[in-house]
Image (cartoon, rainbow, N blue to C red; front, side, top):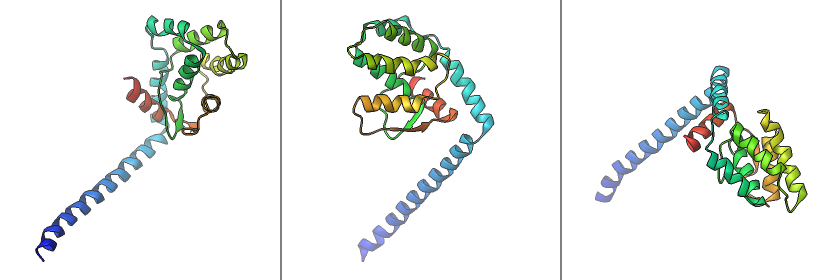
Length: 173
């Protein structure tokens, strides 16, 4: 009988904690969904993303591209797609900036790849990015993901501007 008297309040407290957690999670989720559908918030997020795209990059980063092997260049582009796409799992990230995209494009264009189709794939992915057109990011991610024999983390959609900005702030700021 004493055991029930001790466990009763503990179970009650735990139930309150679990209930509060789910209530607050639902409230937070609702808040995030409202922000995702807010055109003003989307425009503000896109402005910040555009500004980050123009961020200068250390010459060490871009010089490193010159010495990368084929597989490393493929992985760099793959890691960049993670900024733009929704996927169950993402391993690795590399911020997309105008300077990095242009440098990568030039390095790949002037490099001899063991497999010419790999070079063509990467150039086709990066070419629209030079013009800030990332509409191919889901297909780009999944082409590279398939090329690397991926089986977890297929991209399903583009991130909203708010989601992308959150990714940038979490990963790079």
